Image 1: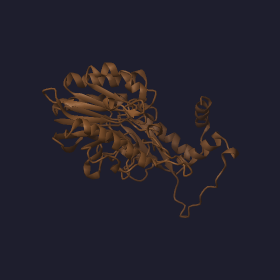
Image 2: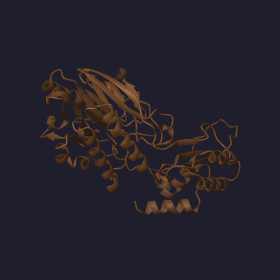
Image 3: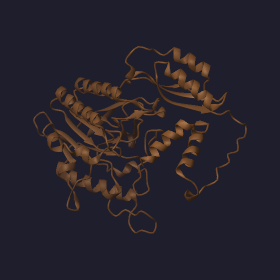
Image 4: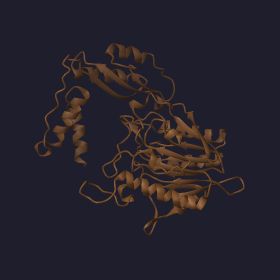
Length: 406
């Protein structure tokens, strides 16, 4: 039996206002072809299918269309999709009755019968060619604080820590599953941050459960033969490879340009599971100009002339630009934006770096009580710290539009 583990699609994501819809369409088409070419029997999607808890109709249509395409290519494919912290938990489960008719299983919430977890909902059989179960998936979505019993949220509370509660959750669920499945292979899905995992800046939220954002990989009992994780966007192994992040589908932020994006293919031979990373080509180039350090406006203009201008506009390269501050920041920003508008690229972000002063002493900014400031002042301070110059009227106007809707 063969399985494919993927996660963190973030359908509906935009980057600096640019839609990633065309890129997602290319990725999902390539994934369907891979499922067929590799003769995959089980597809595991470990959360953050969507980028937002309120996905657009187009985003939902893209997901459903992709799932239908997968089943057309592999009619006997079992699909298990568990929710992440970005996903609309109940909306992910809404088509459940329809999904089950196509052997698609969506778990966005922890389901219970009375005060006990509903094992029938979370333990999903994967049939062999003769229809008998060949393996089982223990599908667990992103756990919220309410899903863990007896958690202490402060030192004054009586109760157990988040780690202890999560360990007890998985221990109880795994023991119940083992009693039912015997010695058949058991694969779990989960969406969380494991200690030891490498984070990527700019796309992953630190998801808090009771004040803790990470748990050790040993919360997953050894009876689980493979843990398919989502949330961290870099493909990586933990616990000797038994616990693994497949990584995101393509770069979702500047820090992910260095990753080998792809999926994980699992070869299942009894309870022996071998995981192999499979590279997936990026649907569109994502690059930093320059690759390291900073550049000038002149060198930026030269770099832009070397970019291929063929292909659809929706798949043009997304570029991050790091500029030296050799003039007034507002002047540099204006000229950079003008150069980028005339190039066959989608600007993902421009940062201006002030020259080093030679003073290596870091002087922390004085703390300000929230009651002594206001949102616009905080925005101006953060904007200048990030960009190296004060916000202009257009930036303040955009902020006020957003703030007025909160």
